[in-house]
Length: 351
Image (cartoon, rainbow, N blue to C red; front, side, top):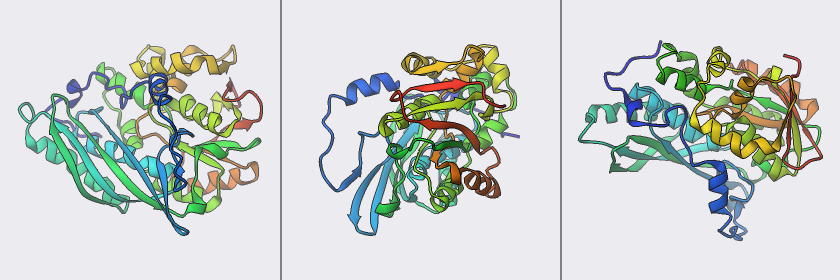
């Protein structure tokens, strides 16, 4: 069971159904005003919508850099710290990298909340960073009306082993490592309808470390983590970068155990509506897929799983290896196609 906090941290977070981001459509509108960086040492930048930047150091070494932070989505400060740290570290894992050092980013209302709460948040983050084999080496704090916590992470990877969004190939199968529905479950908890969301919290505070290691060992063509832009949003970005399309089999996609129940009740976070407005024109849903299942595919995830595009001949081995590593939800959920750049066809599938 999840521990209870004496302070409801989520009251300081109006968008607590997920790690609230600026909507993808708004972000893309802003970013297109800036030219792409032409420095040849930048091996992965913003053009491919990848999860982190990769900068070349020498023939054997490149550094991976990312940053992520957000307001509380749970009331327990220790769990909040763990989830935020896992979410930030995940961007390095999505690139196939190994995190090395982290800088903490903290906003905190020191006149409203006890410093003991801040200490507990930081301890949660520290414990997850240590579990990742990395270090917290400093950070920056400011006083703010709304608590926020996260990490700037620096990792390392061999330049020849970078996994990006941009290399999915026709015929690849899509493998997802965590179930969907964290935004919906947190929204249900905020509404007082879900008293126990430990399944969702355990998923969010689980590192993607083992999944990244298995991906590197088996060999995948492309990968991303699934976070605030939803499964459909992050897949769409992979498809644009790879100049491909995809088919998803909704019956094969893993959901958290009560996500469908709460989605049918309309407990959908604001971010899901933004994702739908952005992505619906790029998605072709079969007529027999109900709206509530569509909503889960648009649901913004916090510290979600990895989504990998892998050759069909390696897919079975990848899933088996993930299961052996304790990642039991991992399964094949779709396929990469050649035509209709960026489009996603969603059918019922076999489930």
